[in-house]
Length: 122
Image (cartoon, rainbow, N blue to C red; front, side, top):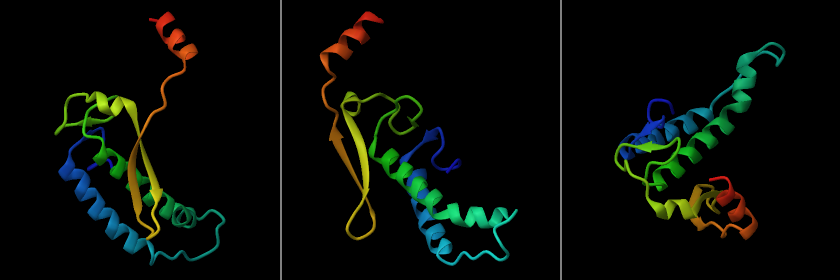
């Protein structure tokens, strides 16, 4: 993830990360740990592995969807902000076939009382 989906990102590297993650998912299905769980970091890593892969895939798929640079995400292939992304949230859920489904949903309009707070603090 640090190499292909780090602070500076581009589409090719992130697609490569998805290919690597697919291989890691296949390998994770065969992971086994010997011994008991007391003082056994391998045991805990094995328990965390599928969660780590899930989060890594979700981050990568969401980053691919957002074709702009904003905040902590910098895309070399999309170096500018795109205001359309300031008005949406990227949502990810498990599809019926078990894959990740990515969709973009509009953000609700900011309530007037919050708009006043933002304007008062400028």
